[in-house]
Length: 190
Picture 1 (spheres, rainbow, N blue to C red):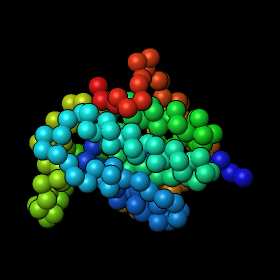
Picture 2 (tube, rainbow, N blue to C red):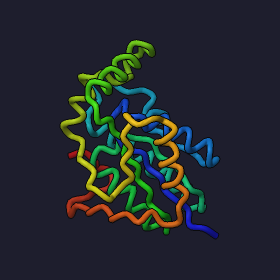
Picture 3 (tube, rainbow, N blue to C red):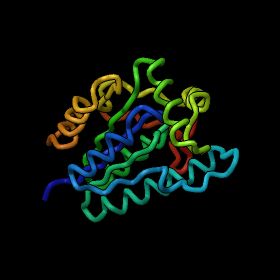
Picture 4 (cartoon, rainbow, N blue to C red):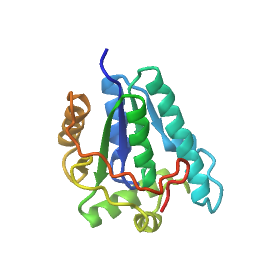
């Protein structure tokens, strides 16, 4: 039996992670767990303790799939220590850890996409450019060679081909994340 995989999509809002993760889940016929589906009722002024709880639920659901030997895809920002906990869960379940980091290298294009999405969806839960810039201050940068880096400036088909190849190769040959000494499951934000 092949080892299951824990595939995580990390990136700030508006970087294409949901588009790619949903498409990958459909293509590979894998379950996808999204933080947006878990955190349906976001209280006004939600603080880090609210988000830490939601992420802990997301990671526990992923762990339960891996325990069954089922690969799973996670779609969340993975701001900081939550990605380290995901790596630990994959190791504990003898699963391959496959992190994918999405970003937009052109800030003007990113802002345009975010603003357009906010206006089209007309939903206060959708992140504004201002809120994303606030989040960006706390987003722990991914270290080189610890994830597949996907720049959403590139064409979608090209990015999806890279993601699919990464998700299906036998060994992604990545450096493991350096686990901080103060990592506490359930406390993920810096």
